[in-house]
Image (cartoon, rainbow, N blue to C red):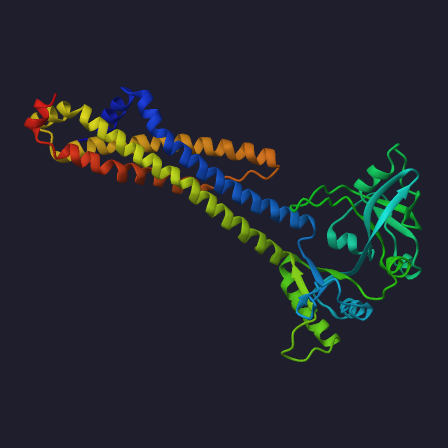
Length: 406
C-alpha cells in the first residue's frame, strides 16, 4: 500500500473521533512538554550559575586556611591563622599567572548614621579587590595603597547600605558613619550587583583598607582569606598550581604532608554547581518521562478499541484483497501519527512553558535542540511500540469472522 494513502486513511480515521484522539494524545503531550521544560530549565540554571560566577570574577581564586581539627572536632577554617603578610608579599612578587592578590579580613558591626542603623559586616581588602571581584564604582573613589599604609578610616559601601542608612536621600559621599564605636568616612559607592545564585545580597557590603580592619576593629595580624585573580580564565588552574607551590614553600610544608590551606577556583565551583543541577535535571526528566509511558498505554488502549470498532471494515478490506501487512501498517500508521501529533504539540507547549518559567525566575532562556530531536524520535518509537500489538491483532483476524462481527 502506498505510504501517502496510509497517512490519508489514518488522518481521516483520527478525525472521525477528534475528542477521543485528543484525549489519547494528552498523556504524550504532557510527558513531552514536561521533559522539554525540565531539560531546558536545567540548562538555563547551569547557564545562570555560570553568569553569576562570571559576575563574581570568572578567573577568581580563593585561598583559605585549611579546616582545623581539635579533639576530633572540626573547628572550620575560620579559626586557623595560616595566612599572613608574608604570604601576601610572596604571591605579589613571585607569581607569573596571578594578576592581583587581595587579603580579606571581616567582622560584624552595627552601621549607624543619625537615627538609622543597619547590621552588617565590614570587610578589609586591598584596592585591587574591585578588579578581582569585578565590582565597579557608581560614584566617588576607591581607597588607595596609601590609605592601607596609614590605616585610614575610609570605606566604600554598596547600594543596600546606602538605602538603609541614607533614607532621606542624602549624598553618602563624604558622610561619616559609625561602625560600632569607630567613625568611618564614605568615599565611594559601588554599582548594584543584586543577589547572587545563592540568594546573597551582593550590595550589602562595606569595604575598607584591610590594615584598618585588622588594627582598629579586630586586633589581628593574620588574614581570614586571600582573593586572587588569574591573568586569564584559561590560566586559572596554572595560577592555582603556582599559588600552591609558593604557599607550601612559604609554610615549609614537607613533601607528602597535607597543605594547611585550601584553594578554590571558579571553575571548581561551577563544576560542582553544574553537576548538582544536571543530576536534578536528569531526575526530574526521568520523573516527567513516566507520563510518556502512561501516554503510550493510552494509545495501546484506544487502538484496541479502534480495532474492535472497525472489525467489519477490516474484514471487508481483507475480502477485497488487502494483505495482513497492509492492515497492520494501516493501524500502526494511525498509532504513530497519533503519537507524533501529540509530540509536536508537547514540544511547542514545553518551549512555551520553559520560556515562561525562565522569565519568572529571571534565568536565560535556553532551547535544548537535543531534547527536541530525542523527544521527536521517542514519540515515533512510542507509537510503534504501543501500536504494534493492536495492529498485529487486527492483521491476524479471520476475514470471515470479521465480516460476521456484530
